[in-house]
Image 1 (cartoon, one colour):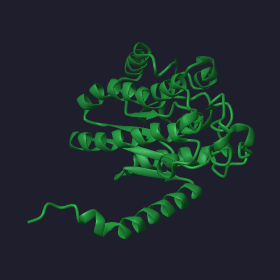
Image 2 (image 1 turned 180 degrees about the vertical axis):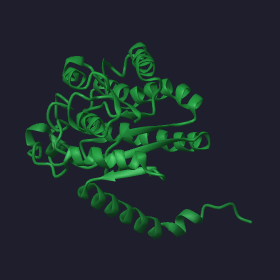
Image 3 (image 1 turned 90 degrees about the horizontal axis):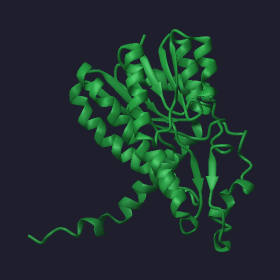
Image 4 (image 1 turned 30 degrees about the horizontal axis):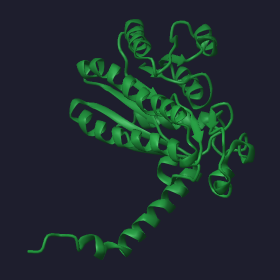
Length: 276
């Protein structure tokens, strides 16, 4: 039995992961901005669930959630930074306040959570941090520049974190899901209020009123949750776990295109060396 703290458990992948962990017999600190949305988990499993109200942009609330989890269960084995939301806008359309709030949640909230759990994990010389990213960080769709930027920043942070933690017996992992049947494209998706006509055929195609994918996504959150648990519990956890056939295909296509372009421009790239 291990103890997991998951941010953003009110629905979607966070909720599915909390339920899967309980099915596996683990302890779960299930958090949500509105704690009533996870109260049923605590009622069903009072001995193994700690339901907590948590806004990851509130530093005091972050510290309190970690402290309460450690006190309740005697330590914390896995942190899953899942809380976050989507934001669609052409780069020019983005509202400053919206963008700052997006980064505060999707990136700096992860930083706060991670820094809060690391002292305990370092002291015990065990633990894992799982950061939920998106295939969007890889493919950077038009209209998702700001969202992709938050996830790109998260992946860069996690890559360095993994190298810092491995000598201490800890692990950091990125999860890159494709499209799953969650609330991401519904309740959890925000967008710029005022579209610009020139972007109608690029960013505009992905605005909520033009997007019919919600509810038809190919990914099953319950299966994603099982895959995450399997990866974390593996003797050799991956640095990057891609979830979904769509994500695997997009990842491979993007990588192949990047390799082709690298080869095309290699002579120009290496010609920049100082002359001997």
